[in-house]
Image (cartoon, rainbow, N blue to C red; front, side, top):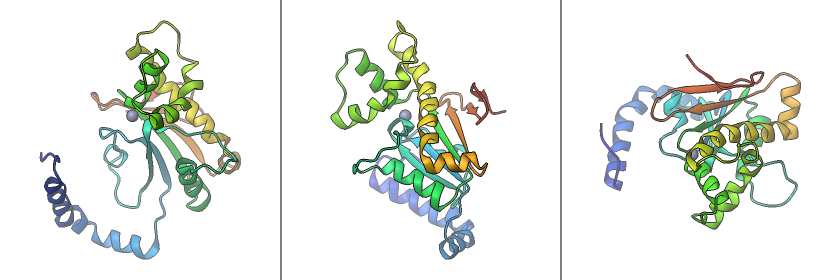
Length: 212
Ligand SMILES: [Zn+2]
């Protein structure tokens, strides 16, 4: 397997894609260019290089509408004029593309989650933007039992954060409306990097269950 470390490696990877997967799916790409995208699933995932949704779900072009941010967080609805890229992407997927499913996928060993836990335990944050963004984890962290070691607390928070982000997601009026009329479902998922196990939290479920 080739490893990407340099820009030359990146270009070599592009050439393999162009001569391989792009060529195989060329008709599909052309149709997608002409007709536009019509994905039915939005995936909200972490920026982490080990948890790539397209790879994990074996998805082709035009199939997944993907948003990635640090720790796959959904902020609460807001009326301010801040630059809200996550909320804009959700609005576009739900109101314009009319996706049928939104999946929030977290993962094990999440650096964003760990940064929040370390911060809560007195370690200085690695940067102001990270600290501000990760503070969205506060309400989820309140559900983590006290007295855990940092890595244990992070493990619990990784799943709690998904539950909390689902709650925030469902609170956007345009999401709530479509969930109510039965045209949209919201799900949680959790990817174990070392094991490859994907756990699922369906709209009506209370606990994550491994996908068999
Ligand atoms: Zn992460």
